Image (cartoon, rainbow, N blue to C red; front, top):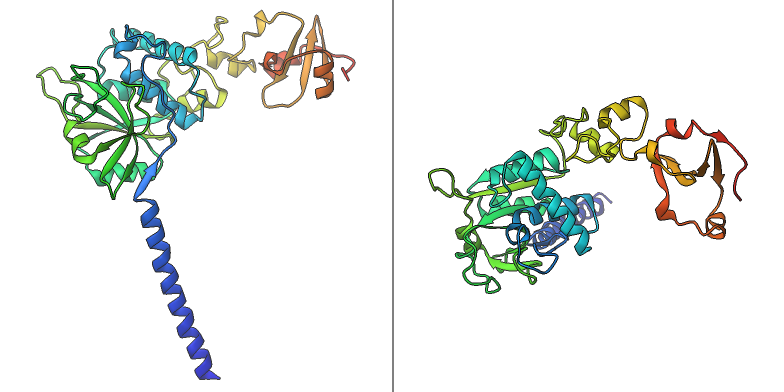
Length: 333
């Protein structure tokens, strides 16, 4: 019996060893090829190579990464155009210009006004880049377009351009990138050496172009308590309350976002300008109310919405304090 038990132990140990080998072999294969689902847009969503879109590769890349981390829809051309224009306006306000922003300036934009974090890495190699991609973190890369093998660029290719790495294939020694400079730019394949050789930041005051890349992360560590728009809310609090990281008064009602949060009012809806009657829902709740004059009536069901031909997209999010100012009246069934 002891001999049989020893045999079973031996077989069990070999089973664990074989399973471990297969396990690591499998994950080595998986991590040898990665493609992240980073949404893509060309930098000219309006279809015309005019300013500011002609030089909006940086803004488009930053917004692609934002949409990826926030799981945002990023296919509506009009919306993308508006978001690029909004970022261009912000750059004009804080930098005094919006064209050809370096990794330093892009990192400032990300860390101050976007939902994720950025750090500049000098001369990263293949292994450090793939480690980021394995962790589902896109890498932003400034390049000299004349050194990168992309036949889709108009001649002459741009001397300064920005793309975002979204994957790689170790066997083929290729990177995959979203390149906003061409309509064919989604998950384009570039040879590793070609891309690393073309990696050049915008020239500094002495004309030197460093081999910088921007590593990104959705986890807020160094910027969690920052307040770039000076509205009294930290970056983490802004994301929690869904306020605009670009603006100190998201709903343009004359009060700073922090003032409204501290007072129990909504910082994202100008409650004083709501036209009655309206459909509203207090933030963090499921109940829909129709407010009119001094009364609020609970809309009890989907059937009630359908019967009155009310549209869910017209429901406004308000604060509990605002809604508490209305008297409860008969429900709408």
